[in-house]
Image (cartoon, rainbow, N blue to C red; front, side, top):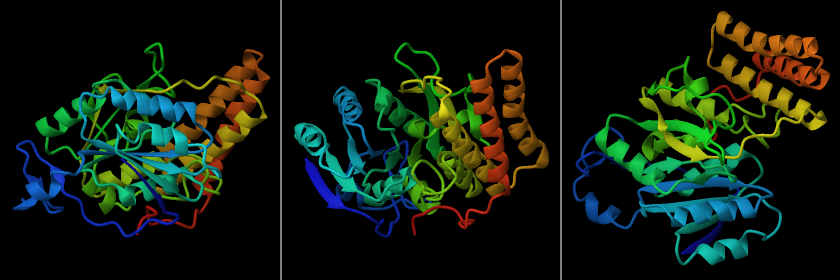
Length: 332
């Protein structure tokens, strides 16, 4: 089934029921909701919110991977930020086999996710990138983990590429709780699976952060999202056996990469400042790309040195900047 809606701005978000091990439905305060089973029988367990811009074959590949899922209780919310109808025939092709909502929003990854979150009907929400894909048992595995550990509000995992190698950064090899210190190696957005009630309670994503935000802060939205969930008392567990596939970034140190490095660095710096990390943690975060700059110069790689330096400068500027949105998310 395919539905299309224009959601330039999120509608008001309401509370969401949550999953427990014995199948009971709980409200936001953890009380059992009587008579809820019939009302929720037609609702999907998972809402998969994907913001997308400029990609078609990757979106198709993701939808193909969903056809193979052993858990069939899900909906897909495609938040389309393209200026044309390039996705319409692709979504129509899958609409008889997958429940799809085709939404539209203003540009910005965080805005797209908030629009999708505002329309999500599932009890669990995930935020796949528009160039990732799921293995056949990903949703079934996550479902089982929430059933076995109802006290957990959110699970995170890691990324691998087509060859099964770590992708898009360094990830912790050991499972454990996500904390303010560990979130940087235990939390990346397209491996986040969170109870909808928690995502609603913290207000979604900060729209001043992330790709397309229209600010200098080109990253950090998922880290900020998880840190605000932690601040609200949520329990987040990192499980490296939860694996999402994503192509690794090719290291090309051109002018565009330098610009991205500065923007991504500024996003991280903004999150460090917003969540009041200590001087030692902030200094170390800035010192690492400075060290990368020196190492690259010593090994006669000036382009890479320029990239690391731009990231260091970005992190410093992000720490010192004022985004104008100190409160949190972008969904009211």
